[in-house]
Image (cartoon, rainbow, N blue to C red; front, top):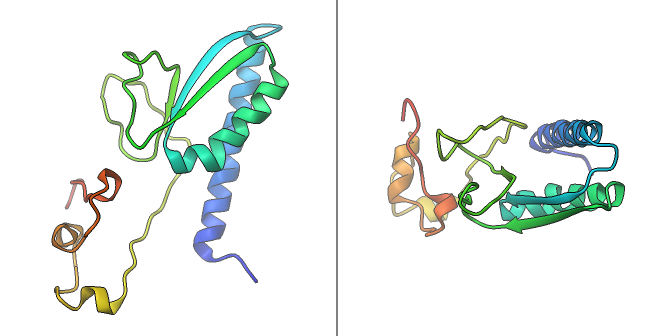
Length: 148
C-alpha cells in the first residue's frame, strides 16, 4: 500500500500546520512563565477532529493551567460576538474585519461517476456544477471566485 500524490500533499501540509501550531505554543509560553486562563477555539468539524482536537489535547497536557474550550461547527462563528480567541477554518476569509493568516494549503477535487452525470452535460467550468450538485450542505455549494 502506498500514499497517493494527494495524500502526500495533504501530509506535507498537515506537517506544516502542526509546525505552526507548535510555533504558536512556543510564542504563548514565552509570554508568561506559567500560562493560565481560558482559550476559546472554533473550528470546522473535519479539521477540528483530525488536527485541532489532538493538538488541543497535547496543548493542555503541556499547559494545565489553561482551560481550552473547543467548539466544532459547520459554520464560521462570529469570533467577537461569541467571544472566541481564534477561529480555524478552511476557505475564504468570511469577514474583512477579521485578522486572518493562511496556515496551510487545502487542495480539493470533485469526483463523480459517469452514471451520475448521464442526465447532465459534463461540467467544463465550476459554474456548471450549480445544476449538477445534489447536496444541500452549505459547504458543498459552489462559490463565486475570481475568474469563474
